Length: 502
Image 1: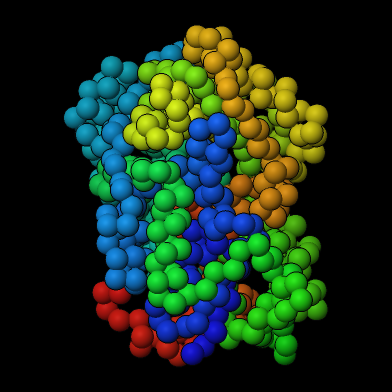
Image 2: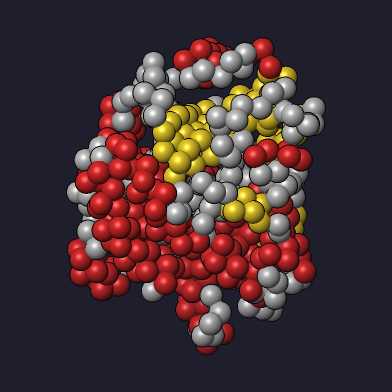
């Protein structure tokens, strides 16, 4: 049996581990923390349970393709409930849209803001559907972009689908009300992208959400992590927690082992789900890196970061749905402050996750385990988060109580944990504390993104947010699908990749 070592047990690492183990590899999965899951771990305190990272599932069909390898059905291993409406989006004037998969309900809400926009909704969704079909059904999202020839085959479709346009520009061609332009352009933010320059290929997400739904796994996202881990070990895979990779051992230009404390694990294949910069800069010696030397790593553009507040409340607020967005009046300016000016502005926009709407077990009876995510600049901004941390959190909590109108909010706080870009850097080795790795912009897309197969080291492969196709739960699972194809091709095992098995 060929041996594979996978570094990092986020969803990308778990996905590739299952795929390779099912192909006959002997896979060892390494995780430096005491539990698997990467960002998708949980925090528990005084009866409150918080998902610390991903909070929703938008492409169950992609998840099922991984469980197919273990002979399992998704609905047999996790309890999924559909979240409908998917989000409530509050605008600065307190108007809101309940973002739903029901096209009639969407058009009715949109007509209250702009009748012409409502009439154009289906035209927009038809184009979104075309991008979805190219990325998901025709396999663009899991196609390895390793050479110019492959990229050129995509160009005609990309032009036809307007996929090279910035996401906001794309949405603006169909809608004129600022609320609708936000509603149909914000999705790149969920994967660390700037809507004003992330390519419109991400405009497939609205159709994906309408077709496949927005789902929650009872018990939180860690229930999906556990199901993946059990599927992997059920196939014979080995998981080693509290085991940090110290070096990817390279001999004659090929990865041959992973060094951990006091031991080397030999490998025919090494796959890293660790942070991209950490993988190259910290785990591979400089003499083995011709392309991804330190200067080139520094020249890449990295995604934003976030401040996360995990708030245990002795009260529930019905105006908050399972997923709620609360927006600043500024859109373009706020995005520029975060991505380009690297400052901490006075205003902010928020994403709130209130899982008790679907799963009362996540908090004590009548209480709320609220997760609040605030996009902020990464550590390129030189913000002293040790100094700013508490004051910034207080501003957010005061806003929710006094400006947004959650009466008595601060008085009902029983649990509060604050997670800043510094924690991303320290706990997940994230370069610049970036929560989503390499930024999804046109010049860092497909062949221009770090490849699924290392350009420097034979036998080394990458999965996760920074490679093709990108971040987000569906994205990182597709990186594993893409990487598996490349590994089997490189080892001349692609005959194992049978029709209908993805």
